[in-house]
Image (cartoon, rainbow, N blue to C red; front, side, top):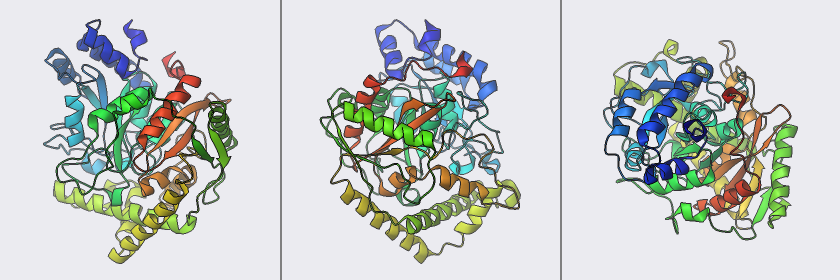
Length: 475
């Protein structure tokens, strides 16, 4: 029974605990067994907290919606008091925060038992998970392929059945990219839906948001119910939800107006498998009664990209300078990966006026897309420009330190748009290609409207379920 439970979702696990059919310690022990067995192949978990987890599982856990369910935290944001937080960087290999982040406080109140931390690329920069500090995480569907990033460790852990869901965050697609690569459901919530405090209230003009990678739509919805809402002192917050998201997944979405785009705004070539996945999803939506037509918002693609990179590199520089303050150490090139240091040096050249102008460009394009979304309920695109790429595809050799950045820009032409606009967006696992690799499909919702995305996702999940698919590593 516990072996089959490895691929149950968190909601089902919590129900078994609530009825007394399974004890939290049984779920925790089963998850630990899978981590110990599969992690040598996948390298998804880089810090284990097994003794603490077992103690917590035997204690009087909070009576939250996920009481007794095992969970992993991504090693970026998500501070856990007394546990190292490296952000995938050698510079922080010995950094230990003295407090929980507000999101972790809420996760504990929801009843989760935290088993450890998952691997991530240095500072979450790349759409793969191959940090120099810990080595590459491997995709459970093909061990030579990337699981995506920056939440690739979390995605590999969930896809392989180590845990039913795992913490993740998203500053340019870092929830949706690994969801696409690993065959999972990945929702990026509306900007400020979840808290970032107490250490920060805003990261890079609102690009970064917190949530998770899940197997089921209902898990993502119920988790967001448990964690959403502003924290004390937040600079801004998302529009309040109309009703619990777990109720939205049970509602009919109605007849939605869906815009389909299969060409990247900047003209980046899109792999035939990714185009096919989007068209398959569009046909499925039409068969469910929705209206789908090809359309694309007006985006100032070159200027948008330039402004995004200015914001991103300035944010990288500010992050490293902040790390220096916290640790009392002076950063140097040999303490960081080649690309990271190149971005740091670029970011330090972004002037204050240029940063403000970059924000104005991103906000102007956000308004254009918002006007486009007045005509449509949902905007449908491929999640990525390629199926999961081979490990090493984003390497930056010393003689070409920005090579990884250029390849990343080609790989993720759609996801960063939602970070700049603040819209909710999701990757849904509706197709596997001829090589057996998952290819996600991307849906944007209107600002503040996770409800419509959850309703549609639940409908798609029922029409074309993915929960019984098992990656080869689990055979």
